[in-house]
Length: 80
Image (cartoon, rainbow, N blue to C red; front, side, top):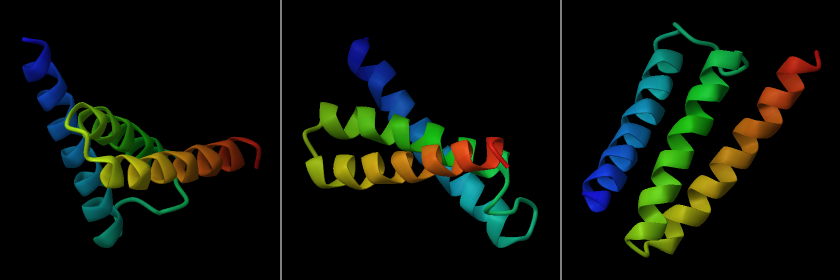
């Protein structure tokens, strides 16, 4: 059951990142919007979880950086 939950979180993370990217590509969300950055951060966290679970560390590192960038952007947006 735990494995199914982790898989679900990983898939949700991928869907959220792809959704954010799609919304940005079609001009629905700006890359500088809080919503876009929150979606990226949440999505990255989901992929980080599944990456560590499956021991795919390249993906984990990529998404750790992705989440850090999103966090910095969120802080910047909130302080502007």
